[in-house]
Length: 525
Picture 1 (cartoon, rainbow, N blue to C red):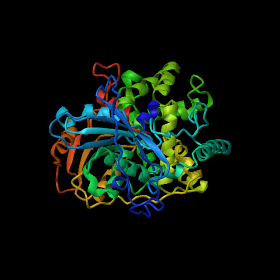
Picture 2 (cartoon, rainbow, N blue to C red):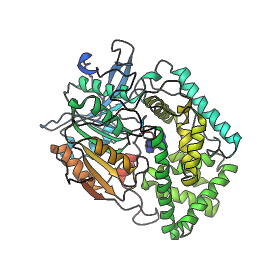
Picture 3 (cartoon, helix red, strand yellow):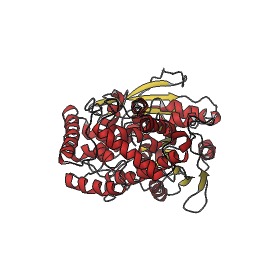
Picture 4 (cartoon, helix red, strand yellow):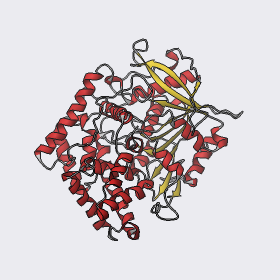
């Protein structure tokens, strides 16, 4: 997966309107014991970083309403427990939709305390259509190749070019995967998870998800509450906005986060020499964008590529020093090479990224209704752009295939739940990809949940990335199920970790765990 795909994980959305426990067109839960559990054959597939990793595959129905019909294959991984005390399987998901979870099991197992990790089989999986699962979707290879039109449709010609591009992607998906697309959605993926549970021989699962993985976990808990033992959600999707409205909310939050980066660059003017006034630094950024729209850096990084290169900075401040250096080199020295290198590191897309985006679009476009009248998109996104220009149109075009998607839409799932054991939620106050309100909303909807907040934090994906305070609560919960209780809207508060220093500083760079996490988090969600 391209770095940007691995880094980007946000959520996006539709009206907080009609919801139902099981979307229309989705079957009632009947995976599991209604289908004979498969025997999993685990084989060694360890890597240098995760040497104890094992892999297996599992066949599941393409359509869980027709369990004897066409079968597809899920790729699974595990890091097996080693302690005498065994607390069962811990399924993990890095988000997306479209994020691969096979390697993620290794990351989670190595990030937890040794005593805790030893008590679980940490189970990763590539959701249907993703990565090593079969079939793996790739609707239109090269969709994100450089040379794309400017994302801001300031002329009719630019709007037409962008519309043709997204329509072409939606058409390609419909032609290649007509028989598959109706079954690429969150509810079917959740039923896959229950098939995994059954194949593992477990009556209940533990679950730990980031970003879109929080929605996946909440939907699983809604459909199978009696099969949830422990539930951890980190950087939480607002389930009342899936998916059109969440995207618009996200745009404002990303604009704020981008301005935080501009302020950070201004703070270190002695290093970057772009000025001490954040507003003037931001003006220089938009001036570079305008220049690149006319003449792409290295013939590759135009306006659209430039804004997408800086997108990951909204997810993780560990990238700020690298982005700042590339920005400064272009402005101060007319040197485009660092900017091209930054694009290659953070935004360029390979075949794995194409696969991730194909699933992202397939799930989100199917999960919930989107405006089919382009004039609605035009009106809404120009309104956003006036106040929050950084990612408004880039995000709009990223999701715009849903305006032309070849399948009908389901209804979102109402994840409200009073049947769960204590659950643990984590949220940063300044998260751009899944803004704070989503975590607060899910805390209200999941009765008995505990809400741990990283005050002042702006990163997306906050546990197991260096904040010992957050990890203390995670460790306690996975050890014995204990959660903090305050009686208020927030149950515990942890202070955010400090922003990074410039790379030239002795105290340079970023948390190794944080960088590793953000290299694995799923595709935009």
